[in-house]
Amino acid sequence: MAARFVGRLAPSPTGALHLGNVRTFMAAWLQARARGGRLLLRIEDLDHPKHKPGADEALLDDLRWLGFDWDGPALRQSARLGAHRAALARLPRYPCWCSRADIQGAQSAPHPGEVLRYPGTCRRRDPALPPPPGRVPAWRLPLGPGDDGRFTDAFAGEQTRTADQLTGDFVIARGEEPAYVLASLVDDADGGVTDVVRGDDILPVTPAQNVLADRLGLPRPTHWHLPLLVGPDGRRLAKRHGDTRVAAYRAAGLAPGRLLTALARASRWIAPDATVAALRDILPTFDIRLTPREPLVWDDARLS
Ligand code: GLU
Image (cartoon, rainbow, N blue to C red; front, side):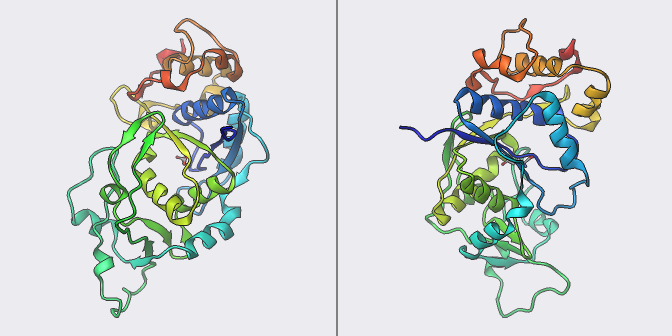
């Protein structure tokens, strides 16, 4: 018998919940509920300069207002540092002293939607050299010939590039702080997560996460990477496109069903003239594979 579906929502408290996250979270919620599975919620609050105080509570409040629920308490990634550090201790690593500018200078700029590939500079650095003063090292995993990381995404299809081609030796910790790629992989594995539904901005680091899973002997989850929301200019939905925070629509008196209907129609999960009042109303027609493969162009006219 196939393992029971376990999905998760993994918001980062870097700011308010906005429509881009909502579409992805709807897919994650619907996919879990459609399969009769469980859905966990994890707040990815590892120390990060962009994290805003109070953002976690506001995020959860907006999610509940939209009708999201999850199984068990909301977990905090910061409470699991011990597990992240235990995983880190099992991995080989070398210190890297390069700044982002150093890495950018060593290669041509990445294409949109790609990450900066590390060329391995510090792997060749003489370990007898003293560390540059006042710098905290980034610890990188030295990729070996057995590290491949390629996979078939259940939504986006076959991924043909290896971790070495995409990220190169990637960062697993900064100073003593485990990096996001490691922490989220360990949390998913410990939570028994079978399926990860998330935005395709994370697609380029997924081979790196697969390498970590293989190295640590953890199962690789099935991945479903969905396209992001973009503004009418084709750029990722952001402040310049107007206020698409859930809080702003709430303050304007919009009912949650209006937002859910607009996003579900645009995602082809309901008929173009159908209306829903709650997430569960989408379930009878929901099929994640109907989601358009191209980025969803958002315009508030979709709400009318
Ligand atoms: N915390 C990430 C974000 O909000 C998502 C990470 C993931 O789903 O693995 O962008």
